[in-house]
Length: 541
Image (cartoon, rainbow, N blue to C red; front, side, top):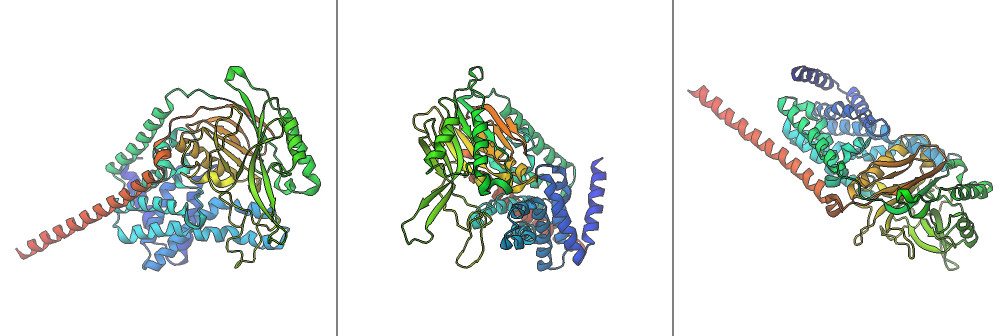
């Protein structure tokens, strides 16, 4: 299709969208937002964004008042996040026999999406109201969208799920730019590319081609060098594949524990020819139904299942009883415990970024709600990110990340000592056979590229995976599979620019995009006034 044909097609679509008024405008915006969610895993239909995002700006522009424009943009965001986050309802269905949770099933996803939709509505309305059509609006909108995503990562504890840049995580090549600009920077480029139909011309095609070619060339340049030598560790991920509905049933606890012990006892030995050394067996988040940190008998059983000289890193609840009369009488953490072959504890990490309403209830004194996790006891938060070293072992220091702690760009390592790998334990059984585990996996993959560190991911029902420091898949166990994933620990790269600067780089780029839109707006305004003066002068003479 030629540039002129594309331009005519875009004009016809824009004209149709502008004709939508009243409730039809909101319904159309909702549908466009839902369409945009198809760009995320597992479908990765990135081209749909070239209709979804320009359509958002066009339909908002057609609304007569600021309020109508805002609510139309909000409807787009509502459709976008409902379509992208529908899997959250699976977690509620797991506990739907509890009345308070059952009530939340039909309203939770729309309620969460209604809040997140604000982060789509605000940049769209600001771009349309403050910047004229064309390059000023496109540039400013890309920058404002990126700043809104960065805000979404911190506001109300943050939820940077399905960032626009994660649409490219279907392979290692298109995400290499994250090593410099992070996923937020990829979002900036993605929104800019998607909105080019609004300014379609040879110049726009050249800009789009330059961005894509530049990203491709940079990706090839980063992937071209030989991979650094593997680290002398034999990773053995145990994927037990225990359904969430069975996981905490009292009569099945012993059977589940024996299941993990049997898989552990069968892990393959280290392969010297592959550069493997000490065996590290990894169990997913809360894989142990017993409190490994305080249950000596459970630790002894786990230790006996280990191969000689191996280390076990296992997800487990951790409990501490408080003095008599305390309320509550205990504290509980979502933890990771490392033990050696004698059952000695080598290290403990407590999850610090807890899931609101899943692991604790915000403003519990005001909201008479239960957590989704059974027990109605708030988990305690750990002190924060840390680099965990296991004394007396040949295991390189690592940064532990439990569950969705891995989705936060620039916040997966502690200040100071740089780890040699990232370890993500998760239990995506809550999400069932849905898009949730694929989206979670994509976020983890991007952290490996951003930090220049290999990432090991152990998931109860999948998807377990090992990525090298450039985000390439070393090994993978699919969703719903049972087994052991065996591979050497990939090598580590020098700290990337994003690892050194964090959100500063994409933040500056987003601000520059808004500034560029502002400069173009001023130039258009000045040029328009100049043309008007010439016209008036011609009329007088």
